Image (cartoon, rainbow, N blue to C red; front, side, top):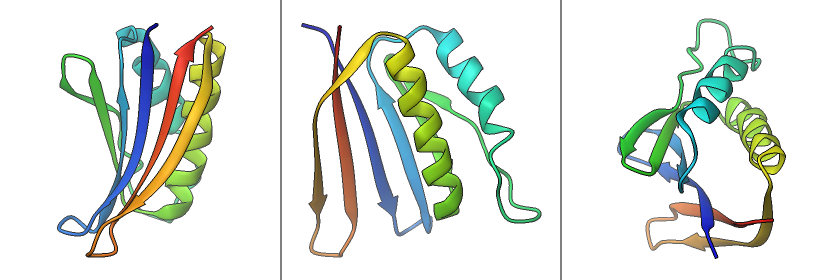
Length: 109
């Protein structure tokens, strides 16, 4: 059964959050998401950024503000659902440095 994983984690060295999508998705998914992210409200002068491929089946989006992250995450979850993926599990981890990671696991319907 194919799986798709979305991870949101805080990187203290960059003072930013990273939203990662790991799984076999077409490049057009991220072209569409990047276009939608351009319209996410954010603080004046703050770039919204875009998903960049970092490995064969991994795309990352560096996000500097929480409000932008939350709105962008909703867009990503909606997009994944329209592609026929269903959420099967989610969990949160916390490290000794109070860094956190939120993980969503999906399977193909």
